[in-house]
Image (cartoon, rainbow, N blue to C red; front, side, top):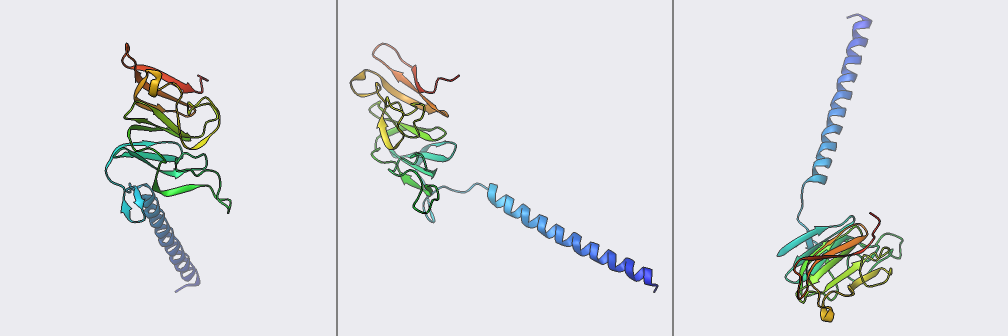
Length: 196
């Protein structure tokens, strides 16, 4: 066998090995990608699936669900959007977040929930709306621009106001509700950013 033939075979073997390695790496990458995009069940806590949900809503950094009148949220919570009284960064500097569904404080009578970018709102069976999370545009509807890590009442809906909410939707910096009055059914009321 000639010296050139030996070199050619060595080069071919090296190329084949490189191709096999590249194929294995591509297969591992596809497996990792597949595991990242395969749906998984939300968890109430480690290993315990979240069940009994009647509504689910997704914000930019968090998700919430309605379970038997209560609201549970998970994901990012740096702006208080988990509604469990926590916000900001943890002592180690990492963002406040939860991989598991946490109870939103003080809500046990909800009939609807909606998540905005960094806030969420719920309608109670009494027609009142309560919101929590970021409030830089007044999207919580409490008359302030102060964020809240626990639900606050939306001013003018529910109670003695004569406005009874049925449904709520949340956007990036605004919130809207379908409300009924003594004379009007299905009126739309909105609060927060009015940029567009």
